[in-house]
Image (cartoon, rainbow, N blue to C red):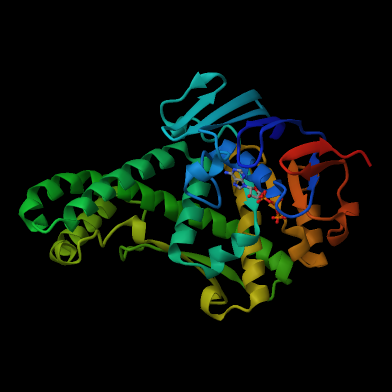
Length: 371
Ligand SMILES: Nc1ncnc2c1ncn2[C@@H]1O[C@H](COP(=O)(O)OP(=O)(O)OP(=O)(O)O)[C@@H](O)[C@H]1O
């Protein structure tokens, strides 16, 4: 797929932008703090309705403005797709081909993206919350119903937690039991999807990792669910096990005032030859693992959706050594539309990118850079 046009109004430090993307590779060059990341972030938000770096939508709207508007035209295998997203203090409004979508899960998927950003290393090094966010964003792209289940789960989780925080919570045990049914139903679906996604991602990630690292070590992914279950395929068994564990945790939940069991406490572990990369990996091994995971995502989306996603490389090429840069470029340059930001062409070996268009970014303005 290809993003042919991007228009923004009052997004971050942009007033108005109307951009026709030119080649397969679009390179945005500019000094620090001019709006390069904001531009790639806007493409990400257009696709997923959420930013990769903040959960506060208010930050995405330009200062002194009360709403931001994003518009994109995407060329897909089956025809053109138009996306419109409005962000405001009242919430989001999303239109797919001109029609407002009541559920965001019906909008997400019109444009698929994979973002490489300096923070990616956090997927390996950071807290479980970072990995859960990574999983959620990626699964939602390929599986619209996942986002719906996740939003419903979070709603019930918040209700549960509010009740558990109250001083007389244990007196409302009956109400809690009513919610448990929904909580476990949505939670079971989330766990099943996470498990099957991780399994597929591992297949790609370990092959890609072997290619980059020269086959010296084996990268493995493991779903660490808060339930001690091996087989996630049988929804009925999973539901029962989840319900039993939740019931067992009841007294402790009243004491601690929060929900102790469920996919909001899951994690994903990455290991090399059986050792956790998080704890034992060198800086280089951690970087390679993070890169492999992201590259795997591209292949997985292509497999699930039937088209390659759009690739967003935010200031990451200069962080990779030549070997990894070449790996990235050569793998995707003929099949994936790519947007790259960089402070200077010197730090990056751009000669390898064919069919590249250059743009200059300065103080929230984007101009075509003819070279
Ligand atoms: N909501 C907002 N409204 C207006 N300006 C904003 C908003 N959020 C961020 N900015 C401004 O955007 C600029 C940062 O842009 P961005 O993060 O895209 O920089 P960049 O060009 O990628 O720089 P670097 O190369 O340092 O990463 C800063 O000047 C910041 O003050």
